[in-house]
Length: 253
Image (cartoon, rainbow, N blue to C red; front, side, top):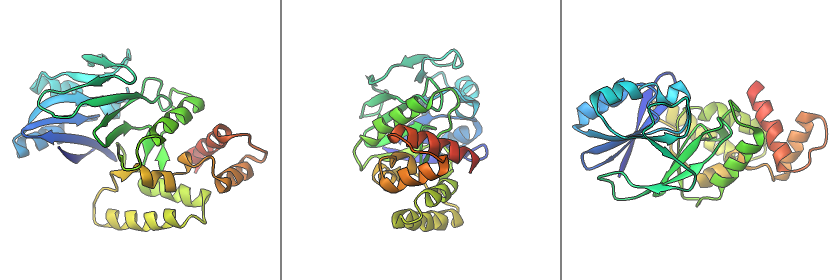
């Protein structure tokens, strides 16, 4: 199975998963990059996977369906009328022509209906977990997003994280502000800066790297707790309160 990032819109990635001559795309915010890739590689679109309702993740679906009548997998949402196969948490399904099954994870918080897909050791997590960051609260709650991130953090450290935005450098700048003494964050930042200078994606990351450098997965760390308390101006009781302060701080960073 080969996974290819297709640049779209301003800073989105559409993930193209290819096996043989078949191709599945994740969160096609626009159709043109997908259609070009399929034509250039001689591939057949087999299915579309959607993680949530925002237009930059499903805006290209109608045009793609006009070219290929394929199943559209996604969450239950009135705002996603083109979904043909609505999925629920912990469900498992297969796509014709692909050897490995997919597992569905409910990860609300960024939006209330958000789901992620675990395909072998590849996690397609939309806007829930970013490289060194997480999504904003745009429909869900801090409690939901914190719980969703804990669900993802429990996956094997070797899991590859395929999120859908090139936000890594801005997220790492925030991570440095939260943990200035974390040398792994600084090393990762330099590595990602070099990738971007070469015009290369900073993705996928690994869950192991996220656990060491993503402040939103490190809310139980003493240093993170202390800096969140300083930011809040009062004592914080538990990792959820730390997470909530970090998320509000990042919104204004």
